[in-house]
Amino acid sequence: MAVDRVGWCYSPQNATQILLASGLIPFYGPWSDVADLPFKPTLVHVSVAGNIKYNAATGTAFAIAGKVEAFEIGWHPVRFDRIWLNGTTATVSAWSPL
Image (cartoon, rainbow, N blue to C red; front, side, top):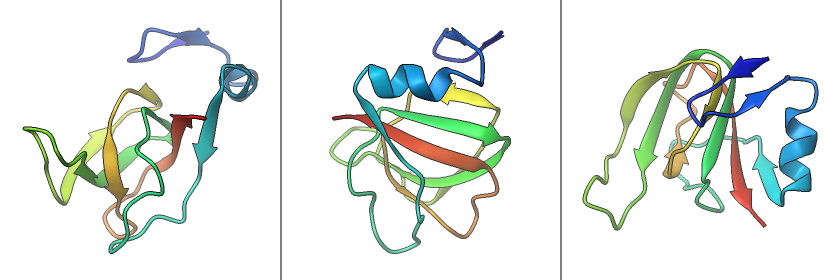
């Protein structure tokens, strides 16, 4: 079992089923350099480590556009407005409550 930044212990085989049962829905892209995500995710899951280029949630004191940051495999509690197509090398999915 792996432990991620959220502090959850999970096996990769059942993580998706647990999250779907808890009322979270996934978004797997397509990512865009010009359009924001259709919702504000509360979690992102990285299945292949790499960089994510993103715009941080607007309307906050820490709004950032076009930041590139390395993400390890696991669940990350973030609030992104956009995940960029160019500049993102990680395999990522965004999750939000129904």
